[in-house]
Image (cartoon, rainbow, N blue to C red; front, side):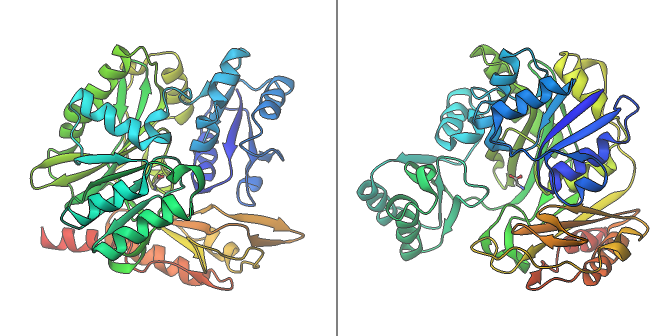
Length: 427
Ligand code: GLY
């Protein structure tokens, strides 16, 4: 099969890397890809939002299947456009992925179908939102309705922070249209986890839980980011956690989608929190997570292409997902200034020596080639993934490798996976 992967991040690098192991796959293109992806696939100079051009490319190059990495082309209707032209594509339609591109819609959907989530109120007027935060106990979570690349969820611990979050989204319009409408919701405490599932419209297969480190700084301090690291399997959730997620989230959600006549095909991502009073959904995404994908795919025994095909054929009831008995820790190396403004174009040193290390995978996120050099080309630059037989070894290997990679203003969290070593020691 000839495959086109759409995207340019660490997630897409991991998807291409995993697809290469499939005997079903003969050729992989990636649009636009990055410096790391260009070493293992043919990169095509088309951006994910060039939907018409991507469809032309797929037609001209006899692509058997296109796999979409990120939410933006999905929300812009890439799947609808391809399907209308008889092109096979993996991902949900624009109607199905509304669960990601409108937080208000997702909350209303959960309320209607009894899927547990934090209590919330929706606002499109600044004054009403301010009045609400003045008269309700804090902390509160203030979320933009639209797509924000992980930057639209602000935790306000006091009134000043709450007012400034409302102003940031609704008056300064720092995240554009996405923040015109906001959701203010109850702040929840507990262990967070990412559950991603293959969904074929009626059947679903939930993958192992992953921990995503959303905050910028060690000890979960600083602002939210797209994700600064990830760990799989997430062993810090309650023992029955996966079953609870299947029963209370995925089953009712897939039933509800069918009832509404919405055919959901692709990956469905549920970000959940295990609170003292039970599980609650924090968010839905309509695609693989980044950096969750970088740690989950190296642990998966299945052929990814086979799972993709069975999803498209509505045959997920014929297969189970199998995992090797290792664990993986992924550390994101970012560029100074991220998640706000950062510069691009810094030469990266040390990549070759890390690539040769045993049990280390190096997934590029924001990188580009300039002559013979690899330079930074984004805020999140690389994900260093260590796969090992226990968390302590994976932790030490991941951070030894991170130390070898140098570029101006490089930084990373130092505690990705640390709590997992402690969990093991306690047991
Ligand atoms: N890591 C969070 C996300 O992919 O949205």
